[in-house]
Image (cartoon, rainbow, N blue to C red; front, side, top):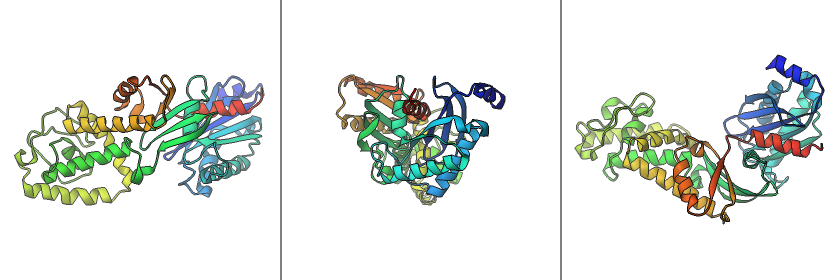
Amino acid sequence: MGNDLNHELRDGRDLVVGLDAGGTRTRAVLADADDGRVLGESSGGPGNAMTVPVPQLTDHLAETLARVVPGGARARVVAVTGGFAGATAASAEDPGTSRARTALTEALGRLGIPARRVGVCSDIEAAFAAAPGTPSEGLALVAGTGAVAMRITGRHATTTVDGDGWLLGDEGSGFWIGRSAVRAALRMADGRGRPTVLAGWVGRTLGLPVDVLPKGSIPSYDQGGTALPSGTAAHPTGVPGWSRARREDFRRHLLPAVMADPPIRLARFAPLVADAAAEQDAVAGAILSEAADHLLETVRALEPRPGERIVATGGLLGPQGPLTASLAERLRTHGLSLDWVADGCPGAVALARLAHPS
């Protein structure tokens, strides 16, 4: 990128930076302030303004910005907008917003970037602005590890539904789906639940001993939990080699394996549910159907008007997302459709350009 970027900067045109700072990583995009042309991209550590301590958040932002803005170009950055998980553009007094602004201002000062206009918004507000035309009004829906919907008015979030975290909400999210997979495995093992390939797949992913896993007519699976040739699981008591004693051993091994990780790690089982549903596993299909119902309920709580724009982001609703088709079908009956964006970086760039007078 270096030589090409230096060539682009020779004319001395103004620059802007857009940041998408989420719970897993921070992404930055350097762009031309006039036409929005992308000149560079970089990524760094987590940027959730509520969970990452301000000194660490400052370091992550400074490192990410340093990678994308060369020293000789820093004086030309006229506006920076950051979309932060845990922040909002609606209130400067919001704790997450205050922490994000403090960290971003310090990071810019550390690098000698004299941006006159520094904007802070939520990662969801930035994602909404990433839709074609940089919309200012409508609905935003995020369905990834967590799940939340917002009404956007004047590019600010004015109403929020769910996003209440793994303990209290995030219904229909990757966490919710992954937890449902583990619950289905436990229910199959103790005899309360229907048969499902998820019991074996979850057990294998957690590294449980092979001799406690269900066998027989349940499909094989590889080390990563991906289905191999499919079959139909029998009721637990009818699975050869999976006696009551073996099922008890399965539960005794599974529970501590799950409890050893932070609860949010349950989200890693969501892809197993999608794979199992693709193999016509009835339990997995029901989990995904219920997840789509939850997301529909979340959107409907915002009282959308027929035809109102819904900008969606998150892995569950992308082009290959496991909930995309089912949720789109449900929304269609209400006169609604999804407009998916990959992340908030283009929106943050667009907001930075809007903040810079032409």
